[in-house]
Length: 123
Image (cartoon, rainbow, N blue to C red; front, side, top):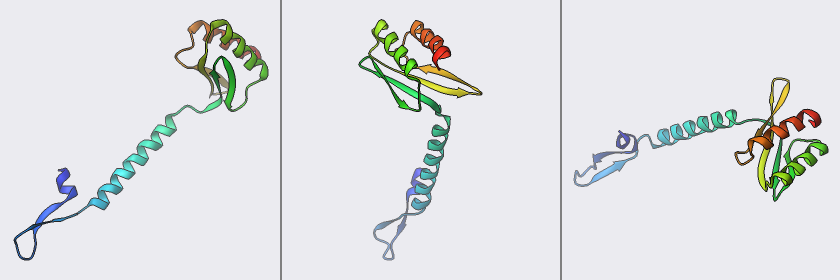
């Protein structure tokens, strides 16, 4: 079926050599581009929209998107030092009127709960 879209063979005027005529390649390229754009649009639409994003690199927390209070950042620094966490991500996603925290997979559950409790106090 793919061969139908790419080309079909026809004989040239002398009838000796087959000649390739490209039929529908523009349509095929357009359709592929359209499907790619739709897939990319859906993928971007399904990505979480962070109110803030904090990255921990080498044990130091820094805001990479949005705003977080200095007290919350200090608590993250302290908690990461105590847990010996060197790398990670903490994001805030708006759900209704609240902002919930999401964590990278390398942050232990006990530290996640501690940061959630801290968020309620300093967030």
